[in-house]
Length: 206
Image (tube, rainbow, N blue to C red; front, side):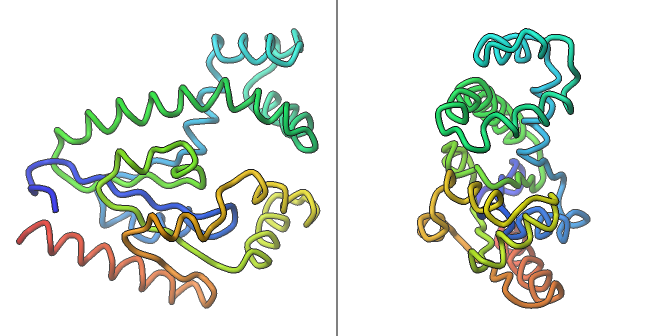
């Protein structure tokens, strides 16, 4: 474990719909701060230089006149059934998300506390290598896809495509320091994540 004077970095991940965002919220009052990888991606879509690159990548000059939310809606339509388009999107956003993670990790290591990053793509982007501890939230593929479909008001088939472009959950489990099972009630998952968090805090003090 890290010296308690330095920042300790925890990642909470899983595949879409596994519940990593909910798990992170369960410890929001216990840690020094939580950041969502999705929120970083959304912020990037509000940066004009990113919008310009996306406009060029997709031959969509109209992107330059849209706000971030409108661009997200358009991009979802474009990449939904086009793996090449999805790769073009990632070529613009992912390097910047990785750069943000590297810079943030460098800063937070100088600050006392426990800092949490949550997101489905932590392992896909290699960000897990910057962290001190990785927690993977797991559930069955069917339950997760059903959650995503209900949450985002999309078809089961469209929700399933998000799993297709992510690492198999089995791969992420091999990278995990701890695994949280989300196949039961919310209280059960909350107790698991709190127990893990308290164990980390105790070890940091020893």
